[in-house]
Amino acid sequence: MASLLESGWQYLITHFSDFQLACLGSFFLHESVFFLSGLPFIWLERAGWMSHYKIQAKNNSPAAQEKCIVRLLLYHFGVNLPVMIFSYPVFTYMGMRSSLPLPSWNIVLTQIIFYFILEDFIFYWGHRILHTKWLYKHVHSVHHEYATPFGLTSEYAHPAEILFLGFATIFGPAITGPHLITLWLWMVLRVLETVEAHCGYHFPWSLSNFLPLYGGADFHDYHHRLLYTKSGNYSSTFTYMDRIFGTDIGYRKLKALKSTEIEDSSELKNN
Image (tube, rainbow, N blue to C red; front, side, top):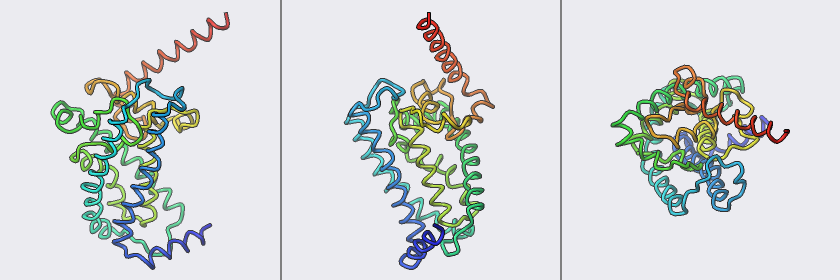
């Protein structure tokens, strides 16, 4: 497996420059993973499949979904791609490389865990700031146009927010100068995580059912369907920041209430 991966990587670095791989390659990988993971949730919603796993009963109109896709393409080409191009010198200055040998899995895993923890910390505080009155009205309200989120709405935001909260995602790699393959893996995992958090479905196989500190769709969906002053649940990936600072109180009360209702319903059926 390792030799196959190295052979494939050798092909890439032989046929493409570092700039092409780090900028255009990263952009192509992001777009592929983002749309391939996000589009199926539009089809699920339109077809009504697996509706018993849907968190909210309300559906988005086809027009609203199409508006999201068009705006996303505009933002991705107009904001994301230029950021990738202009940040390339910073990453190379900090030591990012694409050459062989590939880093060991121990190094890759350690860096990815560090990126998740750091990103979650920065995102939490940045997100809370965006929920102040002026910033919410002029910037963050764009993201909250979709009170019933679906996968692709994860990156639907005001350009200023894309830059502001995007900083949380790139800060870890920027200060550590990882191998490009580590950066790509981090990007793929982060995209899959945020698409899942906005997908609008809570499945039996959702990670939040198995990882105690993982937020997931149910956690973040609550944030979208409440008023901006009462939403809470500001973290991106984990739940401990909201728990520590008490910004998940409403969510935990709702979960406790639902749990009590399920128990009472079960008792009535048994009787």
